[in-house]
Image (tube, rainbow over all chains, first blue to last red; front, side, top):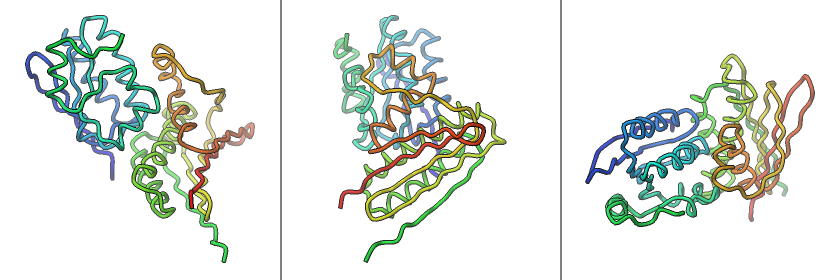
Length: 122
Length: 143
């Protein structure tokens, strides 16, 4: 059944990397929400989300990104999205994410953007 | 010779846990209709969003209720009907929103409806008072 979802956490150059794997829907979104909430509550606001193994996302998953982005930017951080596969990217596009979020090809690019302060839309 | 209409149905308890089973069902319908991988995923997404709205809003997470998905497939289109007996909603209009408005819509299922309307060719919501709500979505097939 296509409903497995995991979030793995690591840190690189003081950036938190959350690696998503599987299906992010209304059932699994609370797990991702808690992961972001924990980082934000702990004052870690530079977050790269590695989406290369994310195979599916619905609005519940997109909503997690949207509900935290303003607070996290207000705290001087950002959520950058890396490695989204085309099939999943089309969903981000429908809601206009490319204009609102810094979406990059891979995690190293996200780390580079954090280091250089690149790519946070106004 | 005209292709016969085929009807398929899936009834599941109203729980987000079952969204995966619903997507699996829809994915098979999409494949049967000859959609490519991207189109299948969009169809899955539209139905997932509609069912998630039913589970969370119409039924308020009451898993003793049942979500009914019916798919009717013919040569020109896929028609999906989602039927519930919970609380009705006002589907309203869909226009471009800014981030703040999108964030606000997240709470009431509005984002899902935006996705549904962008994916499906025809979306119709019917309330039969005291009986049921039915969301009918049609995807036309390009032949």
